Image (cartoon, rainbow, N blue to C red):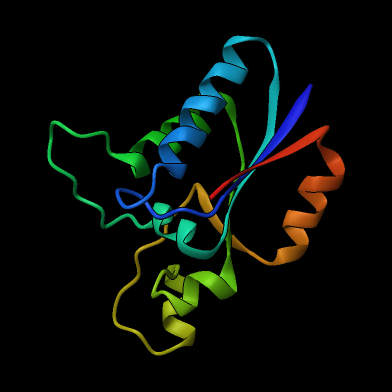
Length: 129
């Protein structure tokens, strides 16, 4: 079965991202597929490359990148929600006249259409909020 994950909680203030990550690993261990992860609302903060949690805590940004690298899971970030919260790629930073950026591959800024495509393509879309 193919699953899509919608993550709407911010790292370290909501259990949603960590629960979604554990759920993803459990799905993959049981032979399921993950069609993609879509980060929306406060969940876009998971894409920030500037997170620096203490060494004894899980680095959620790094964990999502590792999931992508190991299983080629797309990591899509809602562009409207991200820009509103100061999460932007190098291209968006230039476009908006900002001096720096904090979103890098494998995270990708996309629109809500990508979430709809994920929902249609997958057998189940599970929301973590």
